[in-house]
Image (cartoon, rainbow, N blue to C red):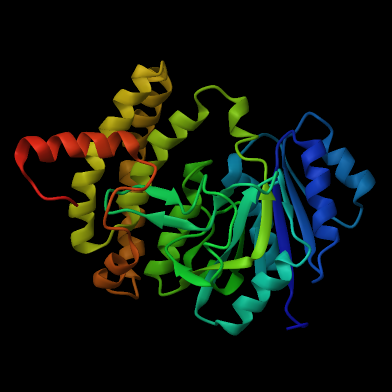
Length: 340
């Protein structure tokens, strides 16, 4: 265990004060880690602060904001090139418990089939959960397990899950060499679901390790840009389905997903977010040929059965899909169809 080399990669964009708190939590870890900050062209002197206050931290500077994917991939590639065994990701607006890295690496060392392990993430006030891993629905929608629930012992068992939150997870570099890094076309949102899906298809498992605690300021970065979440959601959700849903699931998930996707589109219009939604839809269409090509390579190298993937996804709408649940209820009432 002590010989395992671990790097923690932090993407940053104009969050100097939060980043400092994040780095302090990593420097206090019970297990020694190498820290890499990838700065996305910040103009608040984040990079200068790192160089002055945290001289032992490796700093990689992007000339502009390349999103979450562009903010972590250079650090992950650096870890691979330097032959680290594990590369963890931590949001710049998060604070890690002092044994966070220890618990994650301990689990990975004792479970060689695990390609990714994720954390128990709660808000900074330590009152409510943010994520206990990612679920994926037969409707082609992902969801953070436990989000908004009171912080309690409900999710306190190590569990094999569908996906991991990119905000606080660890990745086996052997797996990254095999399946590749995060898909830069996502920029932000659902890129962690995509890489988890690819890992599962390639025969790796994803775990939730509740003892690995992280405290997160939810939505601190995305809230700065109007329409950002809507655009990224409309652009990225189709990519996950097109690239990854295998065999018969491509058609069954795809059909439900179309209904959900158009529901999101019209909901965005009703909220005054029509233009970001339309831009996201158009960009998703532009990316389809590229994603179909990636799909061919991913499915060609698939190591697990379609039945296995079907067994690890949720056969219902996500818990937070309230509007879709109401629409489904009305549809079932009109048609007399069964629930799924």
